[in-house]
Image 1 (cartoon, rainbow, N blue to C red):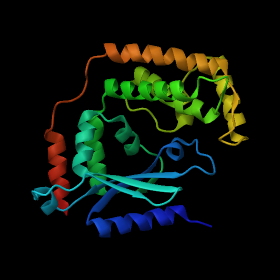
Image 2: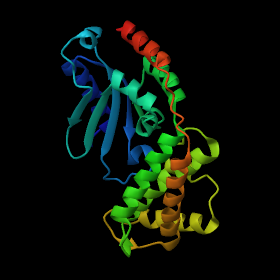
Image 3: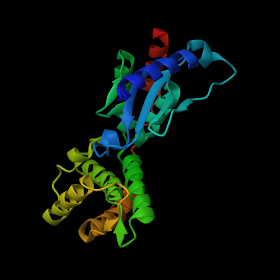
Length: 255
């Protein structure tokens, strides 16, 4: 039987040697991090790496991403430290999900310092825009028919529940779908979500099932609502570079 975790750690070591980098942090992203995977779901590994000081000082710029598509099951992609810190400043919602992933393959003291600084740059406006946009894209592309794939309901509901969490608590939302479902929801909606999850768990991911009207209407209305909220919200991104610059230089000094 394939030992995926062992294989991932071995591939990360191989990347370090071949690319001459140091992996600071590696996690699972996507459905396996959200806790809604199926047995045949692929593994989407995301990592953050740092190059040597000489590489950052060179006139020949290195690519700021490393992409290893190993097979149809295992996909490993990484971001350079500099890119990561810039994306933290921009409030990149996907990066905050990586930083909070419940499935961690590797971490370091350096990453703990980076994450502590980076999380101070969370932007409610950027996150809301990202999440309602993700939900809207899924809804428009996959949930318009009378029969739909139920996993697509999760892919639309999860970002909207993340919006709800941000609206209520004004902080980074949980990554796992089951944690987002702990929020107070209308009973009719909660019941229909549980029915949908039961059916999904006992059927093939590719199966089409009847549209669920309560979920459908909730998604449709919440997309409109969060689109308006995000437009009216003031830009809350931090313009400060100093903390990010300090942690960048500190991590480089450790190599």
